[in-house]
Image (cartoon, rainbow, N blue to C red):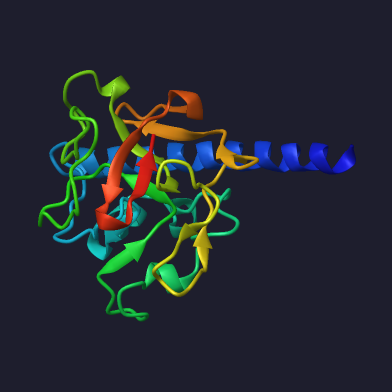
Length: 210
């Protein structure tokens, strides 16, 4: 009786901290936008995974007030965390141009370095904060990943740093849902039953859901 209750309490804490993280990220992005003609920070190469950020992009976000720590969801206890190995991912030192974070970013990639398009059509990357119906446009989302259609626990890692990825906010073998930061800076929880498969990382069939 006690262990399930403790597990639920811990997960509730993760969700609350995750929501706070995304609020702070949203504030930092809007501060950056105020200083840069409504633009979002965009790097030349952001990698092919949605949690990849160009170092210049990540640094612009932290310089606008979002600490490095809050770019990692606290619910990713068995996956990507706030560690130097992820922050300096490309080279392992301070010459890195590629950071792996704990959230999926819908910020525009300028070099076309994405393995496939977003699914379904209508979801797209963004280079500015304004636009149509900003309260319904996802900007940063929990990194809910599967390998194939159903495997959310043992998503194969290619980094060699972790053996597998396990999505945040799990409920047994399936995600309970995820927090989403929208363009207007509000954050809301989306139950997994309302999520859809949106993006695929190449031939490995690693899927992002939100």
